[in-house]
Amino acid sequence: MKLIKTTLFALAITVILTGCHNHQHGAESEQKATSAFPKGEKITNDNFAGTAYLHMMGASDTSLHVSFGNVTFEPKARTNWHSHPGGQLLFITEGKGYYQAKGEPAQLIKKGDYVEIPRNVVHWHGAAPDSEFAHIAVSLNTDDGGAVWIGPVTDEEYHQSTK
Image (cartoon, rainbow, N blue to C red; front, top):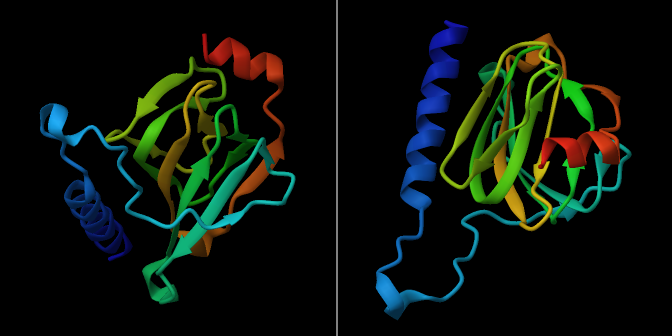
């Protein structure tokens, strides 16, 4: 039953995000698109490097076993290495950034992409050096526990990943 709820929730988020894309038509629409979701409050804990913002959204019904929010990163900002006991989904809504699982090469991700992160995979994600970056982060199976924070992504690791 949990799998069905999680799958339906992921499908609903995908449909919502697909409908939120700003379509541009040639030169007559060169204005900068605004985000479909609020930027939120500045994150002030030690689990992020650089400046990032969080706007938690919905999921006040704990029977859904998910939490989700919009996370906005300024250029070069990133999470620390961490994992999620229940897994995580990222739906990229603005800019470009990187996702890297421990021991694997970093992946460039941009608006319209999504990342499925299995349970307990140690990873980080954040903005490219030259771009703001935003995603809806969905923590799955939250009854299995919240994020497990491991430690900072060093500047050397970040620069190696973003080459």
